[in-house]
Amino acid sequence: MKRTYWYLIGAVAALITAIVLLISLLPLRNSPPVTEQIGTFSTATTTVTKQPVTTVTNATEPTTAPYVSPIPFEKLQAENRDIYAWIRVPGTSIDYPIVQHPTNDAFYLDHDSDGNFHPNGAIFTERAYNTTDFTDPVTVLYGHDMMSGAMFGELQSLYWDTEFLLENDEIVIYLPDREIHFEIFAALPFSRMHLLYYYHTEKESGFNLLFDDVYSTRKLSAVLLEDRRPTFGDQVVVLSTCMSGDNRYRYLVMGVCKNADNM
Image 1 (cartoon, one colour):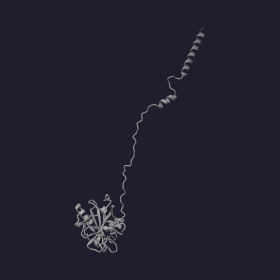
Image 2 (tube, helix red, strand yellow; image 1 turned 120 degrees about the vertical axis):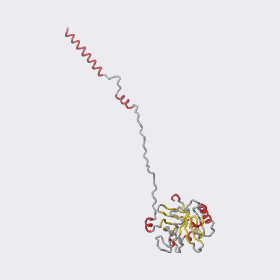
Image 3 (tube, one colour; image 1 turned 90 degrees about the horizontal axis):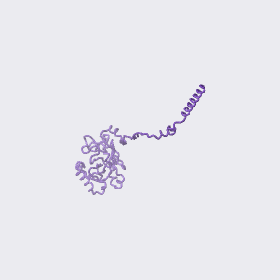
Image 4 (cartoon, one colour; image 1 turned 45 degrees about the vertical axis):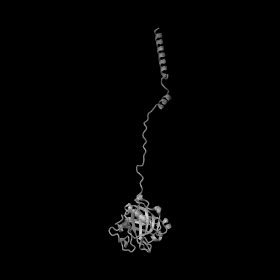
């Protein structure tokens, strides 16, 4: 009887153990499947701080290339320090250094641009009346009326013709640091009086008086372009030479600066 009891107890215990083992192998109902867990992670809200976009710009402003003169001023001034500019008049043979003597305004009447004695002289300005930067209201350049056509010897024979003037109406002045372009507005016989002595062109009244007198000239050989007439505040260059055939006059070719932003 005891042996049967213990067999019964053992059978019940084995049954209970089997039931517990079976239950432990069943999936938990409250645990989501793996795919749902992945989905949960992938749809979770994530706050991302947006980094500011840095735009890289070139802080260096574009620069204009420095002016390089076509005239070898360093070499020229090593030979004669009085050379400070150069004149070219397209359509003519005028292509010369411009000089200014520091003490003697008459020196270059009979000395060339190298400082040597020469009957042709040189193209020059007077220190008593003009600076060397062409910022004066009126700058007068002097040159002889040579029969060979040298210096300013071509001016009268060419510029009495209005058509020629209109086709060749530029005077170019080169300086070491810039070039200045003048547009010709007048070519005429004019009084032999010293322009910058008698007309105080640094004043508006004197400037206007000069060009009133210029435009009142009634010579047949005078070419005057009214639409180009300068006004006070402009810079004017005057090429001045003797007049062939009448020593009571000088022959003048006048131009007004067209690129004052370079002054």
